[in-house]
Length: 291
Image (cartoon, rainbow, N blue to C red; front, side, top):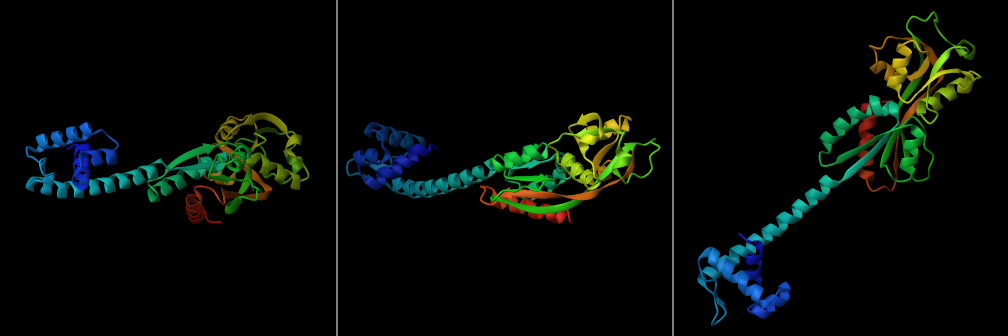
């Protein structure tokens, strides 16, 4: 059934005038007449007595049912519109490479089961890039190993991590406990903007050294590529202990830990558009990743 025909008929019956109905609907009188005739032909009955402008018996019945149907139809369209808007909502999460690889996927899997109407948009990059995107409002929340300082951000600690010192499995090294033991060893280093690089620098500082003092064999953009290079015997590296627990099949040796630990944080804008989703995701992360 044509919605326009029914709507025109209901307005015409209410206004009791072709001209008034045309004004109400913002169409011409000829269009009103055309819609009425099309509806009557479709139903096979006369709906209005033109001589006295009264509804026929069939017209009264159609008017009652059409009014109910149009009301229900408008309600249905409104509900579908709201549902459509819900489906269009996108929650933007950024993560540095370690959380983005090793625990963000599982968190997202659980989250979308709890909130199936939300689409996720994920960005995995180094901590500095993710932090910058969050502060500019390009992300709703971030999971990184760096503490963000910004007056508009809520920062929540999620899980502690240590940096393991890894190297070729056939190395003659045993346990490394000082900066001196690291010198003259070739290292696969992470990018300077990464949380792992920043945490490693902090740990080496506690030993009285720095990343700049270590011999560079390669620079790796991800934990996986670092592990592959170490596995191939290219050099040593610093890697998240959490990541190493997920990479147990890797043929690498573990030769100790840097002295300092780090924390992975959830950060989000306190007045962001998706504040409710950010809080829900953080609550989920804290439950699944206990300190």
